[in-house]
Image 1: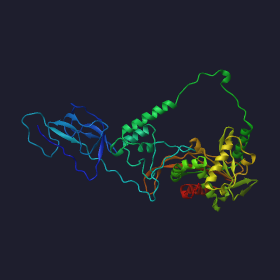
Image 2 (image 1 turned 90 degrees about the horizontal axis):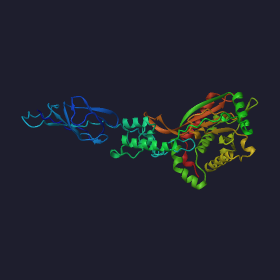
Image 3 (image 1 turned 45 degrees about the horizontal axis):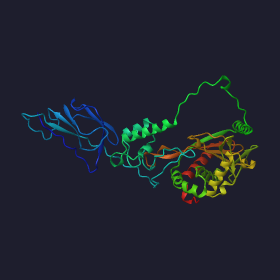
Image 4 (image 1 turned 180 degrees about the vertical axis):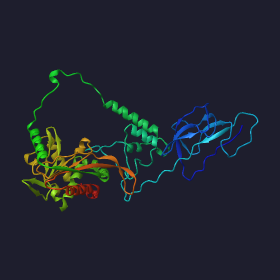
Length: 449
């Protein structure tokens, strides 16, 4: 018999680690050289570790799901031949077979983080109001590539998250049980169990019994308000050649600022700080550019009337149907007054307390279909206006980052539908791009309340 030892591989100055996933052999099993013995994973890949020599698996020293340092002994093999050219000792004439030590391989180095050209806040909790969709546990740094807050998720963790529809940002923000807070598969399993338990308490699939024949159908005549809405929408579609252009907007700065100030604003003014005031500010800023003035006005009798003031229509879902109250001279309001005015007209629209003049003389309309969770929409013009702006849900999505790489940031779908009789696609596209620029580059330090 031969006695041979495998020493710890040479490493650099960094400390690396690997996770034992599953043992393919049990103690006492005979293994052949090159046969898969155990699966493990590093920060980037999952891999199989083969038996370095033929022999018997004498002892397993590290259980599955354990994170171990590079070079740590994982198991002991009894061998009847050397498997290393180092320190081979002469044959031993008697006694039990000697053992060889088997060690974890070196894990790959972690890649450098993406370094943005300008700093951004490190904590950006997303909200679920007004179309914002997020996971409460998420605490994302949107300058990070892919999904990580302060570490890379292993391939196995990412695969588990994808299989169960988990937000990767939420997974990355978990208080991991691994080394230095690293998120492990067990952490994800616990999150999945909690999610399933929560859903089991909420989602009930109940099949109703067959209804009697006389109740299988019913006809509901339209109310007077619904008739007017239907007539207006029909006229809009039939008489106006409408075209919609779409853009995606990075809402990182606004999302972070809103999250940091919404509680203070509500405490001070008694109103919720929704996304709508930010959309209104961006629309107003875009319309102040003379190149976009043709999108703010009315088209009647084969003539476009351009307005150099903003009477902002706000689409509101009321019990009676879609209402569009108009905030007159919205471009003359400060931030706090704009928030309060939008909140007021929306509340009164839902409760049927609008005056007749409050639904007239709009110059452009904002519809936030993201409040329903919709990511994109194709809004219909409110005649005789020349354009309508639609905003989708603010939700974390993977996007290309400046300088290369991919990151997760809260983005929003922006839609602009325009009357093609009054404007062409170039003008509408320029207006949509200006609204996007206003949202992404808004000087939030000037928003006083």
